[in-house]
Image (cartoon, rainbow, N blue to C red):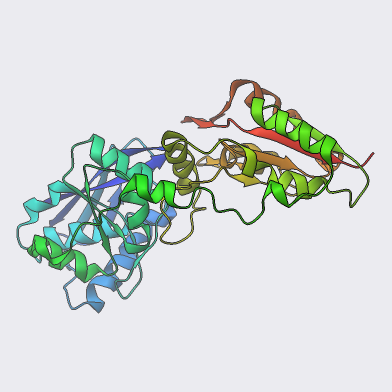
Length: 352
């Protein structure tokens, strides 16, 4: 029997729908095709353990899992949940498997069937709504983040059994509803540090106010202990508040990078990133075999602070030149080229 479930793969800060076709037929062996990486290939071991632990039956026949489109590389462990549900559907252990076509589902499975968190829940939710799916099933810790997208039902699950029960009875789970605007505006002005904490220093405060008003870059030069880092940390508190569009854009980048805390929703304050001077080119700009956003993208719509500027490697500073002009960075690999936004304010400090 053939059953289709739907997942999503994140490339850059966008997601694309992945159809997971599971076929159970006569023969032997488990096969997973469609350019999976090692984490996806190992999924069948986790699937088997989770199915057996929860008193379902793992078919002892031939199982072929195809991830379409088959020419795009699939990575990460978040495909565990749709593959497992596909296996249960194809072996007729789920009633009404045709209901699977209404939902995108993503989640990593523990061996006991617990659903673990994923990266990129926000872009996945945006893609699911764009493709016209009825709902999105994600781990409970990622549900608030995904529920920021309106006009799609988001269900947070903690265990494989929750999904199976929900597919039997739609009233088993209630969609999470979040008032995005209320959530966004409620804690926009709560800061750990504040520019008003700084006493005196009138010249430098005036200079930073002008830089903040025009979005200019600045360099602070002074002896150790003069207050350069303290002032830089407090700069985001005098920048204009994020608009809702900017907040969604910033949250999307942090979501893809896996930098959002558990049960987080929108990032409502401008980010402040302060990488150590030993950072590599790829750490600052972004990169990897499947490119991930770097520090300049995590500082998008906020402040990137380079403390002890002369200590940074020359190549690292040189590679920032183009992204600072174009406000984005393009990372090219043999099979894929991805754009990450990088519209940040650069503040640097150094000793004379």
